[in-house]
Length: 187
Image (cartoon, rainbow, N blue to C red; front, side, top):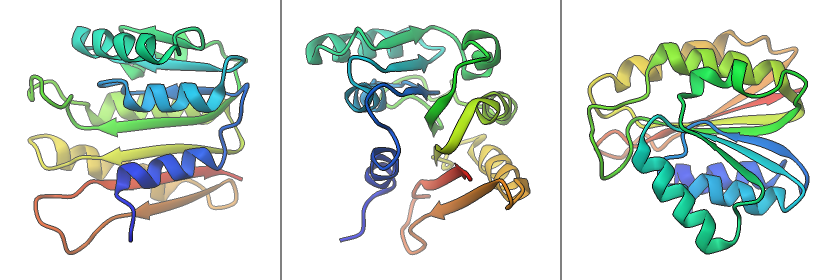
């Protein structure tokens, strides 16, 4: 059976994230990816997790506490566009994950935006280790979603093939704008 974009994103992350790694959850949301990454990096690793919504921080902190994963995670009540100044420049990142769109079960007017996503991608690429991956799951079936999808497609296609490999994964026969996954891997 084919994996959903979410499950495939976890498969792609499991292949590269090892205990002790430093990684980013650029859109912590309800904390599912943050917790998943925290398990992968283990007690010696570090997850930098970002979100602009108070509810996201509360939900993520609760989940991490329940799972005993708070030690290896730093939560930032900031947008992912602040990665450049928030994460030390000398930090090498093994992976980053984005779920682009809006926080499920919350205000659908608060969405990720193309300009902030581009700024975050630029900051992560400069810190990404060889064989490191950036996973973007783009939910685009809302106002503003098409513009962000266009940004991610354009950004990915312009990356030099000598330095990066880019994969897209999507279901083309499903209704209601199924999410599209992008995986950028540094060579």
